[in-house]
Image (cartoon, rainbow, N blue to C red; front, side):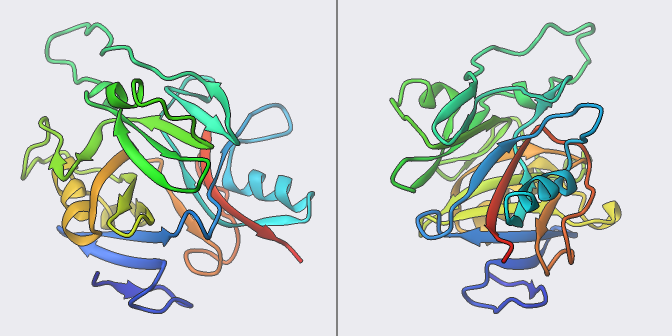
Length: 255
């Protein structure tokens, strides 16, 4: 993979890179899920708390831990409830969503991204191996994952781009997503900020995973609110960030 290394990273087996694709820039982090434990948190909001990276960092600091990496997980609904499956430490906090698209007020109204079928699930099994499956296949696969987040649309399924995506589409936005490469590594990707540098359409975002990051299966997570934080590389410390429901994270000791 070609790219410009962020400070503190080495090319070749780099885990945190910046990469340009179709006129947009991205932060990319690759991890071996059997060697580096990825976790999924469900943030909450109340009078004293905001569901941000910075708040998660404060919570972890109180336990003698800190964030090494954080990226928002799947799309959420009002009230900061994940729109689909959310499994953390083997516990299902939100069930798999197999519903079809909601009714449209007008035929010209766009389908919400989560319901642009097929959507899908990113998951990590109890043995540490990772996968991405279309929702309908995951529902019948008999998986009992340690971690799972559902979102949509599915970017790639066995190397094939989602049938609704169109090359050259003018719908260019910030995006983030997750895939699994041919070595079994988890590949986390998010548009860089400021926004003008990271906007891309769905088709090109899919080819980023397929052609540049060696992924045959990948899932879109969310849009303009998205962010990927890597300690000491993207930011010196956890940023305030936008509000999120699910957050994928790598946690380390603060000592």
